Amino acid sequence: MRNWEDNAVVAIYLLIALGSLAAAIAVLVRGDVGWTGLDGIFLLLVCLLFVAVFGLLGAQSMRQTILADFLERRRRARAAPPRVEKGEAASVPEGAGVAEQQSKAAR
Image (cartoon, rainbow, N blue to C red; front, side, top):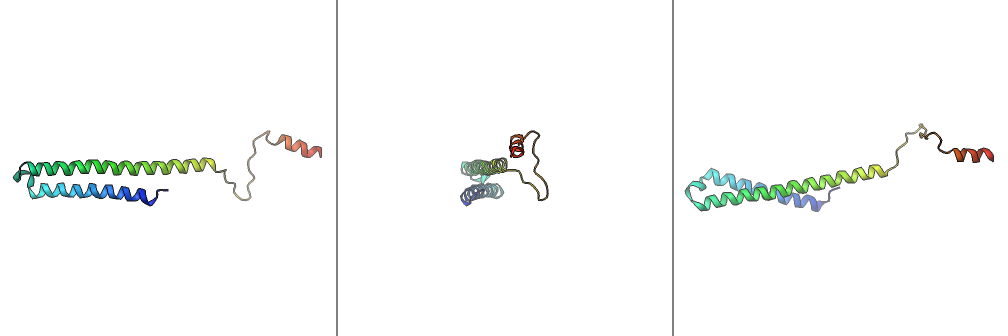
């Protein structure tokens, strides 16, 4: 299971990415790119860079923790013995327990 620290890190990454995306949209809507010269262009590029970096970090962190959860559940499922329903006999392969049956018959 994912713990709260993993969730907090992913939330922080995604909040930074969304905030940077909102800032980039605000720069474009206000028209700062065309009127302020290099400052507006630089601000837009920095915001888009933050969106790319923190968005990818958040996506990778989510993918990594989800994949780790999946592998852990799969490992537990393989380690757990198969469940037998009530009223059903457990299936025993042919030849299994022959020595036990012979020793019981000899008694």
